[in-house]
Amino acid sequence: MFVEAFNTLIENKDYFIDKWRLEDRDVLKKYKVGQFIKIIENAERLEEFDIYLYYKVIEKMTVYQGNKIIVNLLDGNEVEVVIE
Image 1 (cartoon, rainbow, N blue to C red):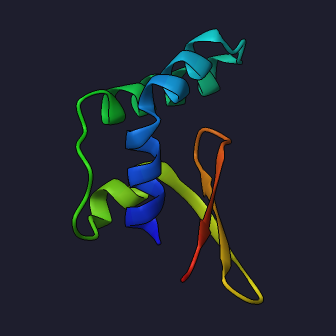
Image 2 (image 1 turned 120 degrees about the horizontal axis):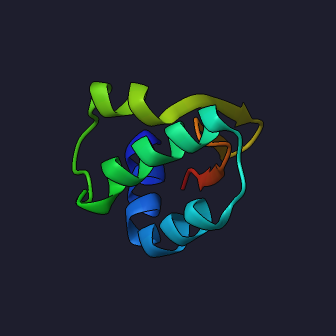
Protein backbone atom coordinates (compact mmCIF):
# COMPACT_ATOMS: atom_id res chain seq x y z
CA MET A 1 0.00 0.00 0.00
CA PHE A 2 2.89 2.36 0.68
CA VAL A 3 4.24 1.92 -2.85
CA GLU A 4 0.83 2.77 -4.32
CA ALA A 5 0.40 5.80 -2.05
CA PHE A 6 3.91 7.08 -2.80
CA ASN A 7 3.38 6.62 -6.52
CA THR A 8 0.19 8.68 -6.23
CA LEU A 9 2.30 11.45 -4.70
CA ILE A 10 4.79 11.21 -7.55
CA GLU A 11 2.08 11.24 -10.22
CA ASN A 12 0.62 14.40 -8.65
CA LYS A 13 3.83 15.99 -7.40
CA ASP A 14 3.25 19.34 -9.11
CA TYR A 15 -0.10 19.65 -7.33
CA PHE A 16 1.37 18.73 -3.94
CA ILE A 17 4.46 20.94 -4.28
CA ASP A 18 2.32 23.95 -5.25
CA LYS A 19 -0.05 23.23 -2.37
CA TRP A 20 2.78 22.93 0.15
CA ARG A 21 4.42 26.14 -1.02
CA LEU A 22 1.18 28.13 -0.80
CA GLU A 23 0.08 26.97 2.64
CA ASP A 24 0.81 29.17 5.63
CA ARG A 25 2.25 26.88 8.30
CA ASP A 26 4.16 27.09 11.54
CA VAL A 27 7.94 26.73 11.52
CA LEU A 28 7.97 22.96 12.17
CA LYS A 29 5.42 22.27 9.41
CA LYS A 30 7.39 24.46 6.98
CA TYR A 31 10.51 22.45 7.77
CA LYS A 32 8.66 19.16 7.20
CA VAL A 33 7.15 20.45 3.94
CA GLY A 34 10.67 21.39 2.79
CA GLN A 35 11.76 17.81 3.42
CA PHE A 36 8.78 16.45 1.48
CA ILE A 37 9.51 18.69 -1.49
CA LYS A 38 13.14 17.52 -1.57
CA ILE A 39 12.01 13.89 -1.46
CA ILE A 40 9.44 14.00 -4.25
CA GLU A 41 10.88 16.66 -6.60
CA ASN A 42 13.23 14.22 -8.30
CA ALA A 43 11.67 10.94 -7.17
CA GLU A 44 10.48 8.31 -9.58
CA ARG A 45 7.76 5.71 -9.24
CA LEU A 46 8.58 2.90 -6.84
CA GLU A 47 8.56 -0.70 -7.96
CA GLU A 48 9.18 -2.18 -4.51
CA PHE A 49 8.90 -1.22 -0.85
CA ASP A 50 11.58 1.14 0.54
CA ILE A 51 11.62 1.07 4.35
CA TYR A 52 13.77 4.20 4.64
CA LEU A 53 11.46 6.23 2.43
CA TYR A 54 8.46 4.85 4.31
CA TYR A 55 9.71 6.28 7.60
CA LYS A 56 10.44 9.65 5.95
CA VAL A 57 6.88 10.21 4.69
CA ILE A 58 4.31 8.05 6.54
CA GLU A 59 2.64 8.98 9.82
CA LYS A 60 0.16 6.12 9.92
CA MET A 61 -2.05 3.83 7.88
CA THR A 62 -5.65 3.17 8.83
CA VAL A 63 -7.25 -0.01 7.50
CA TYR A 64 -11.03 0.02 7.10
CA GLN A 65 -13.34 -2.94 6.76
CA GLY A 66 -13.58 -3.91 3.17
CA ASN A 67 -10.87 -2.77 0.80
CA LYS A 68 -9.93 0.78 1.82
CA ILE A 69 -6.78 2.09 3.51
CA ILE A 70 -6.12 5.73 4.38
CA VAL A 71 -2.43 6.61 4.34
CA ASN A 72 -1.62 9.67 6.49
CA LEU A 73 1.53 11.48 5.47
CA LEU A 74 3.74 13.37 7.90
CA ASP A 75 2.83 16.64 6.17
CA GLY A 76 -0.85 16.21 7.13
CA ASN A 77 -2.17 15.01 3.75
CA GLU A 78 -4.06 11.77 3.28
CA VAL A 79 -4.02 9.36 0.36
CA GLU A 80 -6.80 6.80 -0.03
CA VAL A 81 -5.76 3.41 -1.38
CA VAL A 82 -8.29 0.84 -2.52
CA ILE A 83 -7.28 -2.82 -2.53
CA GLU A 84 -8.54 -4.60 -5.60
